[in-house]
Amino acid sequence: MVDICCVGHITLDKVVTPRSEVYMSGGTSIYFSNAICNMDVTYKLVTALGLTEMEVVNGLQQKRIDVHVLPSACSVYFENTYSENTDHRTQRVLQKADPFTEEHLTGIEAAIFHLGPLLADDMPVELIKTLAARGKVSLDVQGYLREVRGEQVFAIDWADKKEALKHISYLKANEQEMEVITGHKDVRAGANILSGWGVKEVLITLGSMGSVIYDGHSFYDIPAYVPEEIVDVTGCGDTYMAGYLYKRHKGASVQDAGKFAAAMATLKIGVSGPFMGTEEEVYLVQSGSSV
Image: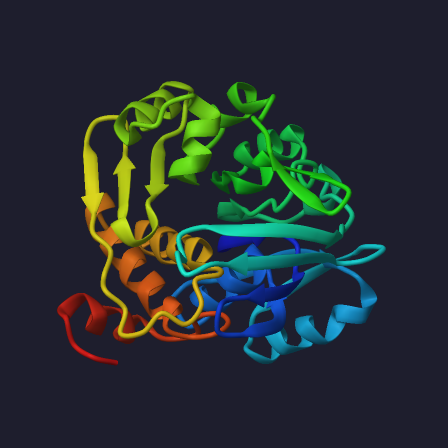
């Protein structure tokens, strides 16, 4: 039994911005794992990737991250292109990996399972149901809303959303994803619908505008902290969720967990690649001090 288990593919990422073109490993598994590895929590990553990328797993294990590797014919390959407006990106998928199944998680126990599907067919609903019977399930919904046709990524609705969401304790979506799922642009209206479908805590991230969290009773407005420099916003949502789930597991309130998550995401914006800092560094951001 571990405190938190993340399930997601390790990807090959090409990140293109107006200033640079960088190749790196990515995916929820990379950003979430690095963000949480220095926190006071027991943690396991369940991932799948091609044999040619096993060096990435070795790097995670050298950081004392417990990694359970599943075989896959190849790894996911994403191309993320950002304009000057870093809140939005365009994507291409140049390669896909094998999906996760219920059998892949047999024998793995956790208080919280955080699921980071990257594409619509990464994780079946039955996997969500199985894990919800063993612990709380956290979900970053973005992958269920991405369908690949050729190399292009198309936004789709999630056909099984009502069946799946009633098993979700923590749901993260950005404002565009929320609108696709609920049909509402208004954040509070959308969050209320998601809560009505069974989600215990709805987290809507708004990029540089912060985030809103709804626990079925109260709305919490979480402001974004201002980064010293915007270097790379890829993985900010994964970093945010690592901070939020860590603090909630430790007993923090929704508001305090949200502020911690926002500060951790701000630190990630200032570096290329994942955040690998400490809890103390996050608190410095919250206090307004430099790190």
